Amino acid sequence: MREEDVIKIAIAETSVIIRSGLATVLKRMPGVKILPIEAISLQTITESLSVHKPDVLIINPGLPFFFDLEKLKEECEVPDMKCVALMCSFTDSSLLKGYDESISLYDAAETLRNKMDNLLNMESNDSEQEVLSKREKEIVICVVKGMTNKEIADKLFLSIYTVTTHRRNIARKLQIHSPAGLTIYAIVNNLVALSDVKGNF
Image (cartoon, helix red, strand yellow):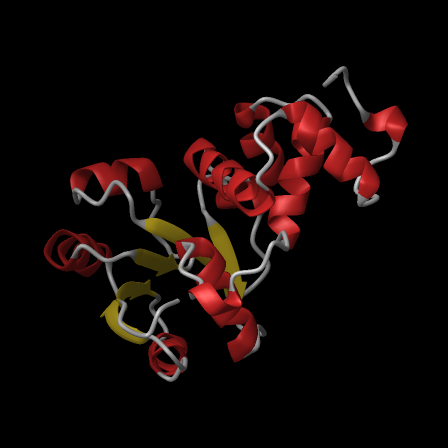
């Protein structure tokens, strides 16, 4: 993230301790200005999203009301907002479909910072390295195995938009723009074995 960026992050969680604690940690992240927006109910969430148009929504998927994330983005007119699952307890993985990322109560501040950096693709120029994140490596492996964006999204519990964004970032970082090139990269870097490759040449 760049120092001049102001990131608006909505936090939807009923526990005041968790909500306020997360807001405090976010505000203390060095090198970036975070504007946390706290929400505790369905009404305040939709109002906050409509009024403030946050960049990120951090939401507990176990809240007692159901969210269709795509519908929520559409109704509140925030199509590019990233959605992060706040893991406060065991959550059925099927509930995480459509989220761009997840964070846990046990994540360190540095882990939270790295996830926000990756999510918003806002690394500063001096820290940008040609190194793939764990998620990007997972996506490379899926591409090399011949999976479509939809299949990758289903497998990794991501939205197709997020998969497309990751693929664009991978191409930018590696300067590789073809499945054949990614296959060579994956083999050379021991991400896959030759037996995993499905006719990318």
